[in-house]
Image (cartoon, rainbow, N blue to C red):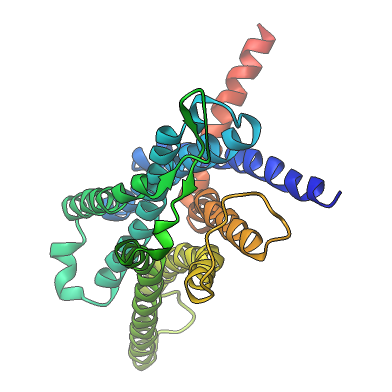
Length: 326
């Protein structure tokens, strides 16, 4: 009796996530690609790449994996080789999104803290190279995930669904791979984002104090400092994105530690009475939520993105009114 409402949570949560996340990411990609939001080409490149990977997460992890698994459990996508490929693709997309967040954080660190290197590093050309390298390495890193699984059962010589092999928990090689994969995502991004943000904030506060003293010595009062305002906008966007990442990946990180420290297995069933299953699924839900809310962070922190979004919404509404009048 208790499993029905809990199961409905998943059945409703993921379709809602897809309905909101897919059009939101598409809208952000279209708006940012037009380069009318007053952002530098470097920042625009990172934000577009993050929106693309978030859209890929919505399509692969939410729609093709979660929604199809809930509503169409016996479809072609549930055959073991396809299921294994989907798992590798899902994690590659999620890892790419995470590491692009790190790359964006590092870019802002270079722009704000390392002024002497800003001209060389914070360019569109370098940003594109970094994005391609990050996505390529994430794909290569997750190729091995395809080989983690075995069929849950075989019917008419067709293997169905994916179950993690027992050797995954006993083999030193697989254990080492799991630790390396866990360290690379999300442990290392956690540490890098926190460290880079801490140094960036320290630098901004120190720079603001210096500018404040200079303005006071120049008897400049009751006037806004455009440089300080520019830094505020940059830091709000940076902290909103990185803060969202940390909160969204926290439970996922805890689940990885719990599995290895407590010597339990990752859950592959739907046992709501199993604490590992509840922790694991809650971590996945928050992790995927991150790819849905990022577009709203961009719009919430950047007024020009909101302006372009409003313009985009007015066009189909105006077109509908014209058609209706005709």
